[in-house]
Length: 275
Image 1 (cartoon, rainbow, N blue to C red):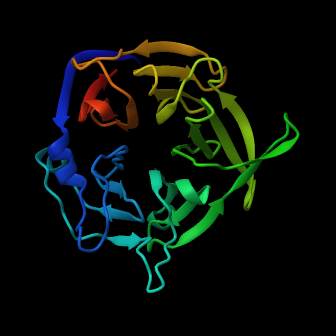
Image 2 (cartoon, rainbow, N blue to C red):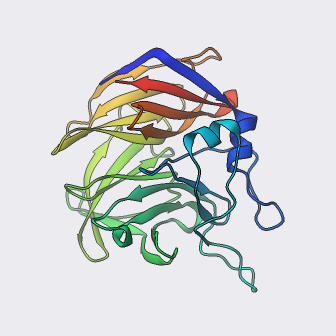
């Protein structure tokens, strides 16, 4: 697969913000949105400054700026003492199990330096990943300001993908026993600069490619999961369609074979055909 322009369009940032904005009397929101995710049933999960909500929306409603306020559940709201489970959750990803009760949401809890696993049934927090082991380096690695977590999920191995814009790399980790995680691959030390968004192209039952937004270079890159080699680069810095200015989050709509990209400094969402 690769990128091409024939079905290229953009969503106005103001319309998009209407789609993801919350009730300001109940929860604070950011003026600019960095990340967007669509699940298999067309549901949108929205990261917020202090919590996450699961809302029922369709792709059409997003483009028109409509919002269904009947949330299935909400987790992270301030309690009476002013505490919350999250501090600036920056991104989210859904992992699908065999049944609905096995589905979970992975949340990058930025200022708590953790990746939290949340039940989709009731919003309860099942696990908090704060560290993992690198056998090749012979040391423990602590999660620090995770900017995105992706579990798209490569279910064959149950891998979790973490982008570290401050370290210019991507870590792929795997759970080998309950609450025990290891580093299985480090990618991008020589080719990425401020990677913020990730989505996955599963090319076979045993392999996938990473599609990464390289914010500093204002481009999208396709990387091989096993070798880490860059296979294709798309885009450049600018304001025209197909150009970006500090791209952030990515979402792959498999049904339409298109990528939704948060083109942050151009204040728009770009939709790119990927086939």
